[in-house]
Length: 364
Image 1 (cartoon, rainbow, N blue to C red):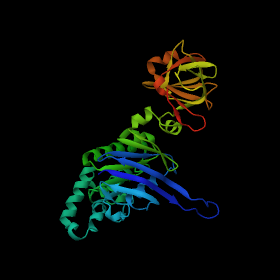
Image 2 (tube, rainbow, N blue to C red):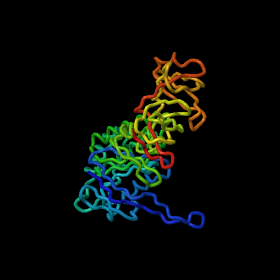
Image 3 (cartoon, one colour):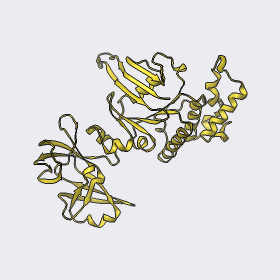
Image 4 (cartoon, rainbow, N blue to C red):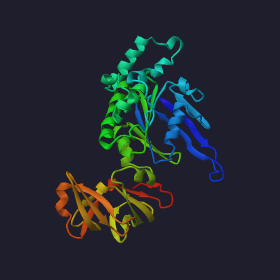
């Protein structure tokens, strides 16, 4: 099911004397989510991603704009009639019901021609449980399940009606690191198997980049960039996106463009062609640094950390905006990181320039 948003806006009124100004949680979103894709809404806390999910589900009414599921305008349609499956952060399972009863609960409210017999509900619950691989847990209650198993029950309950759209609101945040990895792979498998258009809200960029077909990066209610995860990582639209995506995070320097060259301090580190001269913000991915004896960028070396196939090093430079920055190199180049200083050349496709005042991308 394709989802189309037209100038979608949500404004919350001010609250009391301390917060009298209205809050624009979602600001004029116009975009199309393709049919059958897994889309990640990504951004820091307070950026509006959960508000966006609640607008799609019908739990909130937009201040302005329209929402379409396929060709159907669902803007004024109540949540229960939108055909949406919603999985909450805290799972929201009924503790006194068994797994089977939790899964079949949405089916018990069907009326008219959609009403099902007990046998039909049991079969649909079995199919949904099998999809998330918990069919052997049907007689247990939520208190007898692990966090990951409870999460699967919540997903099965959302899928049992085969919704038009599946919405996941930070579904992995309550799980430990190993279980998060396993469960996100399961979510991707389930989405591929069902083909249901899915919107996945998270503040964890690694989660979004690992399983999503598309990501939408948000900041303070505004859409910053939309695209394939690797494309957004390789070609950030602005400084916010460049800083938000990447582990370790991108390194930012103050630089200057003179005579077609990029300078960090007094070192001409890269040729940038016809970029207008002046001060710029420079963002360099940790994997951009290649140690070379004659490299144009000289950095102080604090320490080296060996991490299996890769080597991480903490370095210093007068133009860096903090104290130390982290680089990542291949373990085969470990012997080149010796002494108190190291020379590097930079991979041009991993270096980005931005305007100091606006953070707007400067391409070269």
